[in-house]
Image (tube, rainbow, N blue to C red; front, top):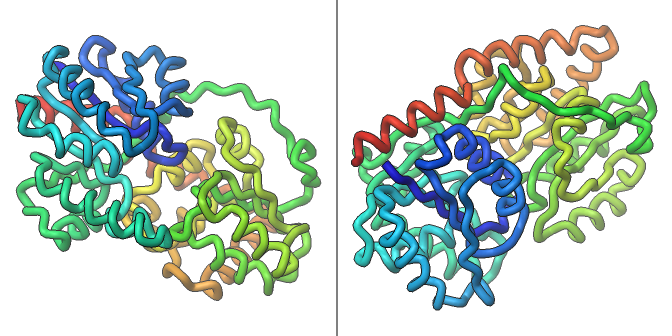
Length: 365
């Protein structure tokens, strides 16, 4: 069975980590990856020995790539094409009648919200993505809540398989050289880290509102990620007087090291599928404060593991941060991180993800 995964190549968030870890688990002769632009995914795929191919576009509107894409699938004898993201979906929908492979898709985010605040282009891209999805043979939803979301968009239930994200917990090598002092933090600082694209859907402004009313001066926030509203968010931090509290670190490859100096991981999104960043935090036994979106409550299913709060609620976020800080002062916060780690290892492993997807492929073929 030969499987081809397809993604635009410009992604830097959770879909990138999901894809690289998953493909690294498959036998190398069974799976390949196609990207349409150079970027972090291409680099990391090569570093991990994945069979990756660049079908480069001159721009995102260059449709001459479609003939090369079609030939690549047919000449390679791929039985399944597995897409990730709007561009991969659109291109595959345009050539579906020319290929013999089954088409499956993992939905990593709400397709109705992917291009929020992107104006007329965003509205057009959203309609194109929703149109493309009508041709997909099978969907992977990464939570039951996201399955219901897909069904609300008109996707038949029999076309949706729920498979939760997973990470490798038993073998997680990295060499930590990062210290708090490297980021101008003191050893006594209470560090909150938020790993998310700088995108309207991620709820950064709610975090800033919550931080404004906190009195604890040694609470520090690390924002990891880049995105279209970076300048807007930096301006908001300055205007709200949070410059001494919030650091913008941009896109980083040393997420493991950053989590090793983190006390609490934050997720303030308005919408998610199943945030892989929560599993990354669990790898490091770091507890989380996360909004009740997607499959968050399926992982953090008890207050003993962390905090699940309503989206767009600065007061609830503020109270959770204060509670976490008080536990930190009592040296009791690590208990939540340990329990989150135990739940993640038993229910959300990379091996379970791999087996579920492989079995679904075989059933399709």
